[in-house]
Length: 399
Image (cartoon, rainbow, N blue to C red; front, side, top):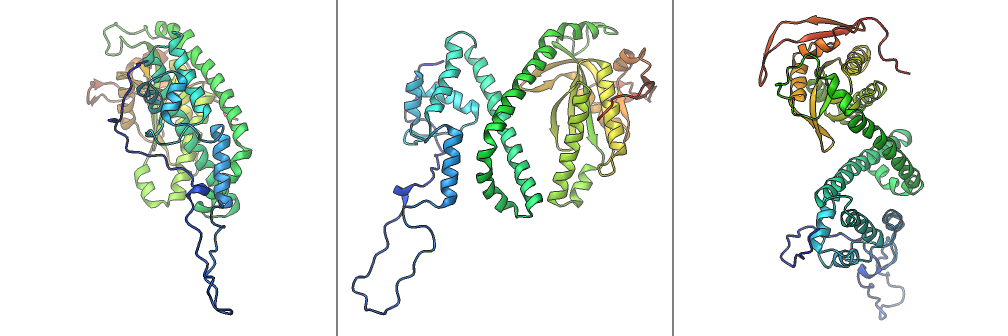
């Protein structure tokens, strides 16, 4: 990493908001020694004695110490110096992790922060990662854990509101007392899941990548728009019908339950089918699978599940077998764009594929393919959609 230091001209506009301690308390109230006997005493504050933290603040401080590995004692220059790197390079890592800016006076870090910074830098120093790769990997950790933490907090708060019948604001305060008993277990599950997911990702993205490309050659001439892209995948979209009008008629709680039910059901079906849920955007999910057949099974299962659901509306589904670029946890390329366009053409409760995908599935008797009328699609010209339906077999079996 760079060894240039950046001095006081840095643009720092966010300051650390420390939890007040005894030294932050105001002066002691004056006592009138000359007051006449029997006179009314001055009002006594109802809060904790001056210089003493409330039980709530003590709980927050104890939780922070547990999560950060100790009390905040270090400033940013001390952490950078301890890791043997400039402020500029340290800030690159901290920004990748999603930390706010701190200035030289902020006592914002612990020894664990210094150890983590050193660990990231050591990967670069040892030549295991380039600086660019280290920042990208670090950013993936920061962004994913940020979303994960928000998700977990909201899930716990929602559960407390539902089970205890308390207001949302009260549940958020009480969560501070509940978390210490959960942190270690959640951390263990996180590490366990990371290793399992990393192994699965290696299989998908490295070991079986060449086989997928070979399978995608059939029916292609080599000059398609997605030909230079490195991965062959079935790309699918599922889009809830009438979501916008439904959301306008729902209160916040009901809408949250609808969205959560939609995402949970999609995640379950995609996982059972051996695919991966790439992302959820409101009323739509984007998913991928390694083969056309796996993508087709997932797509049909999604369409059927929402047709049979008594609460959720039907969904439109599309699936395209082609080549993609995978970056930053997302996917890109003409295959993705075509699948998105096909979703808007599908009727509620149905699955549409393109002609190339239909050809790849044509010899599989588990599927029935029904050609639809040609459509002019922006960016693709005339395309020939095909409706995918269930043939022989039961399809995906959900427990």
